Length: 202
Figure 1 (cartoon, rainbow, N blue to C red):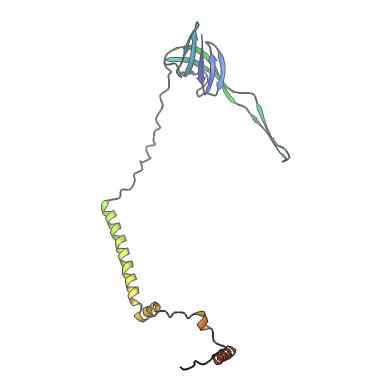
Figure 2: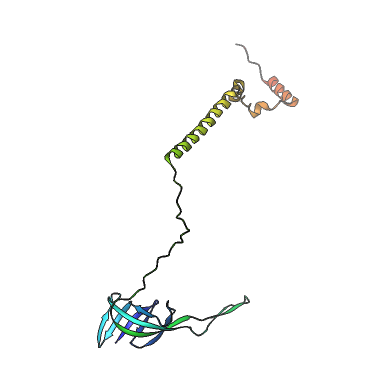
């Protein structure tokens, strides 16, 4: 009889009284642990497959020891850059012995609720009353009204003469009219007038 079990994210083929190494598990040495993620069970040629897990079946085991694996060297290098680095890694493992494979439910220790210290008082958010909110709204409205009154007074203080002058701005004369006629230009204009023939009277 054997079973395929998911332990700490990895699948293992286990049998009774078999010792295996798995990733570090929570629990002290000698403590018992149950695995309920059973994917397949084979018993005297009868195969039972889970969908994805077989219900009401448990693999019971005992933690024998906690240890570390062999050193794995990790070497990094970038050519032509003068960079190279050598690191070592040792994975944490737990040695487990399988006690039984059969029906049952996994036993889980009840989780303890975190107790709050007596001195700690629950934080209470400050309550905003309706009366305070109304007073704040009224204050904002009063400030806006004062600003509007000041703006109106400032407009009235400006004299009317300044407004009229600002409204009626003298139009800029054309560039041609601005140019003053030089004495040479005046002579040329006179000669042109003289050359024009007088109109004959009928």
